Image (cartoon, rainbow, N blue to C red; front, side):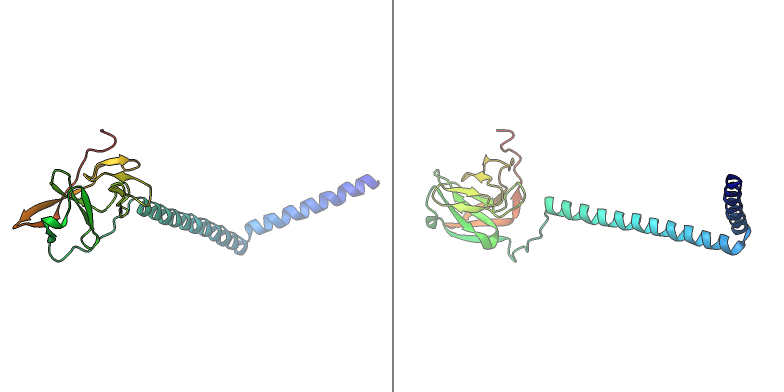
Length: 188
């Protein structure tokens, strides 16, 4: 008899819970609350997905802008720059013209070359190593000789050159005419 009463109590609880669920199922106010909960849950899920996509796009943009810097430099007012008299530049020397963004290299043969001051790896500003007469990148240690040729990676392309002319004994550099050089460490 004890088991029978226990079974009956369990059955009554089960049936009353089932009746409540059936009553809730048929009650329109309960149904509308369930729809609101479902739509709120769905809305929050979609909101988190959208926020995740926006955050992912922002991170991607930051990574690409770091890896591919495109810093706009102000162009000088005049594109032809007077570097100075030929005799001011000894053979085998490199002179820095930071305000005009180039190095002026006079070869041992007497030929002049104007070299871009930007490393061809990631665009860092090169530094002049006067003792060794080399151009060195402070960011990743790329190295270039007095002709702008790559001596040490990670840069694989030679330095860009600017047009140089000599007029009445004065070295003139056209800062608007830049020649991109393709040859470099990979082809050497």
